[in-house]
Image 1 (tube, rainbow, N blue to C red):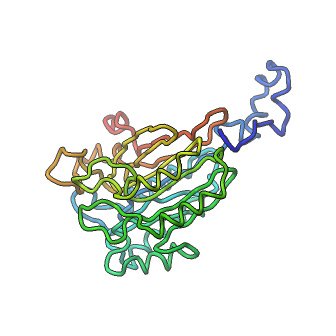
Image 2 (cartoon, rainbow, N blue to C red):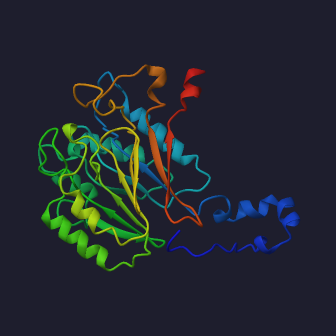
Image 3 (cartoon, rainbow, N blue to C red):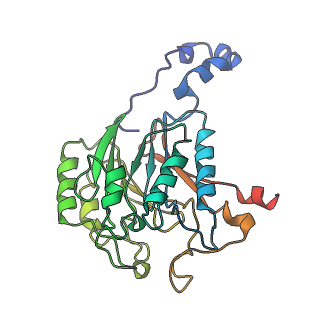
Amino acid sequence: MHGLGRHRCPLDHDRRDPQVANSQPGLRRRCPRCRGGSELRPDYSDSHIGFNKEANKDVAATLREAVAKINTLPRTPSFMLHTGDLTHLAEAEEFDTLQQILKSCKTRDVFYVPGEHDIINDNGVHYRERFGKGSKGSGWYSFDHKGVHFVGLVNVMDIKEGGLGILGHDQLQWLEDDLKGHSSSTPIVLFAHVPLWTIYPKWGWGTDDSEQALGYLKRFGSVTVLNGHIHQIVQKVEGNITFHTAMSTAFPQPQAGTAPKPGPMKVPVEKLRSVLGITSVNYVEGKSTLAVVDSPLMRSNDSEGR
């Protein structure tokens, strides 16, 4: 991928005779970058702590299962992303519960963006006090990690129920300035709650002014856009940009246009964990883009066998 040099194993096994290396698999296990992709970055979305309706009466339990799934990874990620709707009603006790659950994760650093449920009643004041320290405006920010530039955007402020997401002039201006300092070979990861491309405008599944934001990204060779909000996997590749929406850890929603409106969708109990899950972004050597992989809490064939 762009920005990462070719890996040379510090244990020097890749210059050994192949038969010798293959006869000593412990050599490769001792080198973390030889155990698979060079970096792995999990993404939670739509945990909706506080929700307790028929679609899932224990969203805290399914979030704990997601954490347990991350804790079983062979390498502990250095940080994780959460693409919004941490809570259902932005109550203090809901934020408390979320933070308490995430304390059990081996990966302690989490970078957040808010969903519309996180800013109910106070325009996100409580959310920013807990999760947005050091951010700009309503909570946007960026950071670099191992040659990749990550940008967290906020597109849930001032939107009407069922309306499209909005970035706004100030955030767009900031984004343009933020990206100017990076070469076109820098891999970019944008993450925001509402999809940054139009999936189904009738249900508000898109961002009204995203075209301007995406225009700033055309010069980059590798761009990955991660979103939540719609509680299901939708993928699209357009030129240099890979778009991806994640499953929720709380409840599924209907596919676009298959119901009168979006909202929590009840599925058979034995199927629920096959439609909830996490997303991982893997830095794969030799690839020009990042690999995005979805992992349900339980495979459907596993649930059928229960």
